[in-house]
Image (cartoon, rainbow, N blue to C red; front, side, top):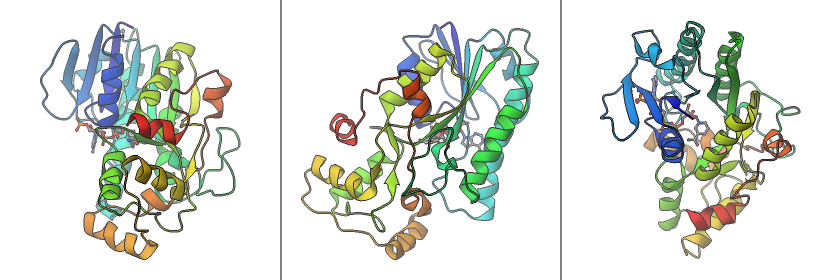
Length: 300
Ligand SMILES: NC(=O)c1ccc[n+]([C@@H]2O[C@H](COP(=O)([O-])OP(=O)(O)OC[C@H]3O[C@@H](n4cnc5c(N)ncnc54)[C@H](OP(=O)(O)O)[C@@H]3O)[C@@H](O)[C@H]2O)c1
């Protein structure tokens, strides 16, 4: 690949993708709202994620565009945060649609973030891309509007893929370091009933899946999740085992609600049952390196 553009590539998944692709792409351009120094073949270009201010020229002739921009959902869902969560995703996607359309040689493939949270809470049914059921709360509505904004503009020369990604487990970012710390402190018991499913993917498989989607030219929506979602109680037990703490205090829903208020987050992030499977990736022949949570945690 000659040129890869990553919008919103300064966060956790941006770092994961930069590490994976830096040897495989001649040049990586990251669109960011902050000032960052270029290094090696990585260039940082300013954008405001909502208007055309010159950054759009970078898209000309690029091979692939990946958009990861969006305010973190790890916050209280008050009106201000909710509106920023929605606007940051919709505005960045919408302005990228404009930028792609005005290129004379647009990126060949555009992968836009979405989320496996688009499917309803499910302890009974596994959600794939065809039979998965999409529900109606704040998070699911954000995901729907985000995907609608992405797909509603037709880009005849650019393939489009929405990545319905589950919780990405990584060493240096995302949810895992915090869960591990809590477990080391003895609070690694089940959360709520513990029956809810955790849909997860190892950071290396996330990057490999993105590369696979690009190589195979896969379009449309795709679940970027491991094939083995596990119940929260099993997930927490496996972490306990890995960090060699023989017990884990369970945390009830009420206690989680109090804790979430104190640290400024939402219980949905741990209590929603995400029972999602990667049907399309597997049908296309993708092989996971970390296909069980045990293997993933041994590595992490
Ligand atoms: N991590 C996961 O497990 C996971 C799972 C499913 C889906 N996702 C989705 O994947 C995307 C990337 O995830 P991540 O974990 O890398 O997130 P992250 O670490 O929070 O990074 C997101 C990036 O978005 C940009 N951003 C933040 N607020 C913004 C705003 N108000 N307007 C425009 N841009 C803004 C930031 O870049 P600058 O400050 O440099 O502009 C930031 O580096 C997100 O959309 C997330 O919802 C993540």
